[in-house]
Image (tube, rainbow, N blue to C red):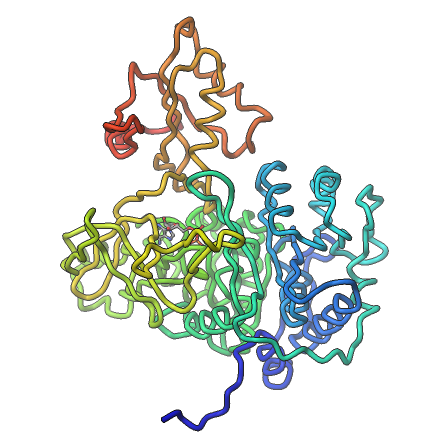
Length: 542
Ligand code: ADP
């Protein structure tokens, strides 16, 4: 027997309808290229998103078409999230830090019909446009007065586009399984892969992230998302905040600027913020050098990479709780959160220092297990470690246009590529990674691409790249090279210069070490685990 409750789809447009009526006066504050402190309300934001939805619908687009964005965290990007999704299109956020070749690949693979570009990225987009012929128009996220002189084909001013949209546009009632957002993640092998979120998955994930033991977002909060909106939808905060009625503060292109972050926190009375470890180091360095305080801030959520204890202890000194979160682009992203600080008194100081570093306990909606090499499930005893697998309604089942190639294994669990332990209290801790990627400042570097460029060098016989601890960027690539015949004189400097112009600057290895040989498996693959072990004491020169 079925229940007798209304069958209403979970749609992003319901956030708009709710927030307009219930949280209309809550503010959104943004740093943008043309205004250091743009300020308006959810009511105004969603009125403009509605017009944008109308303007897009008036163009030659089909439901499900992709709208790309190359943009910072600010109010126009926020409007684009909603304008695109609520009209039935897919907001495809693109990481502008990628190398142009990867950007072209991603825009073409996604078949973006329009790309919305921050003025900061117009020059970048101009270099891509000729190679992206299916893009019908490039929308510059600025006012008419600020519209740059650009060679972009069919360049459209964002404000003109919005002004021309229907203010009374009625959002279509979509299927909740319809796609609403798309984000590419650099895979371990080959090209980046698209993770395609649905309205339903996004709504469920947003509700889950609001829970007190997850991000814990309430109406009283002022939330500063420092994680980029092009990186897994800024961990879902642009959806969760208007649901809760929390004020949003967007740092624009100042995400790495400790002084601006401190200013925003103090002047806007930020209570909750989230970002990768690197951004907290920048903020803490500013606070230490100026003596500034961040008294309104109650909690930060740190994820994307392991959070060093020093950040947590420094934040303790400012009266800020650090909560570790773990997740993946394929998981929308939140999978676990570490709420051990709530029970701080139950632990000895040494125990607390250990437990608070863990990735945390699974949030409701995400199931986890750890398995050995044969796939047998391992106990949650805090000792046994194995491949971490997850499943749940906001976890990717296949990648975009790779539907035949399942993201999950046959057993219906998604293989995270992380190796973990889980203790009897459910605290999961990442101990290693099976996937061959490096995470620098919260963004992936594909080891394979770096290795391919290295081995193209005529003096190199073999090369491997591993992620090595770095105090600022969490990890940086260390290149290990076996010199080839005639390569006796190859220097680290010559090797590093070889990468110039071939890969993004920040992908270029931090250092080069030379070795006589690399460890191999029986099938000839480089054994990264052994290599990491061999170089575990290596430190990057100051
Ligand atoms: P995000 O950075 O938003 O978490 P990505 O898909 O870019 O998502 O990266 C996911 C990977 O980042 C994880 O599989 C894991 O290797 C690493 N990671 C994320 N959070 C943590 C964490 N708290 N501790 C250690 N590693 C983490």
